[in-house]
Image (cartoon, rainbow, N blue to C red; front, side):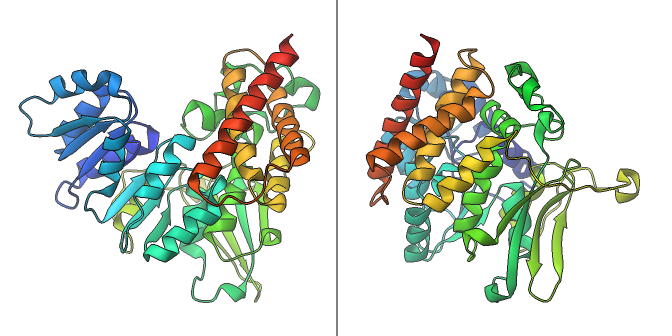
Length: 384
């Protein structure tokens, strides 16, 4: 499990703990939290525990003394963990830091349960080409993509007319545009339906997260970009839909709990018990849908434009967004400055011709670093 102590990792760990006879944990990888990693490794009887940041290695080693669990740390240790013999890898490292380790985990016959967005947003062509070359299988963990995966007729992709991803609309779905400029980090972190990490919560509030998901869907499924659509669905009961050429519209529904798509990936092609609240349609009463407002949520527009631009425009989009979100959380910029920073960065890179297709992971990481720096400089200029 790459990204073991994050929200996806913790949900997966809960499912493993409830099914101890079904899973054997080969390796758990986390960034820097020695205590949380050690506790998880012990509770799941993992064979090894790895910290990406070596600074807390001695703490990890001390916490695992006498357990028989191997402890290691550093970049090489992370790649060694990704290379270990296993059937399933859960790729849940947050951010661009997860790209190279998840790519390294792609091996012949292996299943990759993918939760890291950057693998497809920043390097979708490279990632999917390596999946195909290795004969590996990708299982989407994100609730929307997992929903589509469950109702997409993979054997007859030509029968698909369009794919629809749903969005809750976040906490500001009904806000007036003038009020959105005054949004605080505390307000933006309060998602109405989902419990997520800080960056994803902010991205959901701007709807950038939905834009990322459109880019991911383009790479995950054999469809064209103009076959992708977003619908705002405040109840978060319908997670994804597929429209077929015969008029059929198939949807996957469920309570907003990430343990459902994670369980689907972990047990695939079978199903396993998940301790989630069952969706009660009678209690819910009604399901509503509306078109997204691209004027109030320009981040979604920018993501759609980056997908159409192709090359490394999505990588620039992601790097600029991550930098701007971090600045917003620190109070350095306003809420609507997030998409403004992203648009300025995209325009600058497009003008310089630096968004051609990537030939390697290093190409992606170079553009990522450059875009982060450009966005950070724009933020400093704005504050001056």
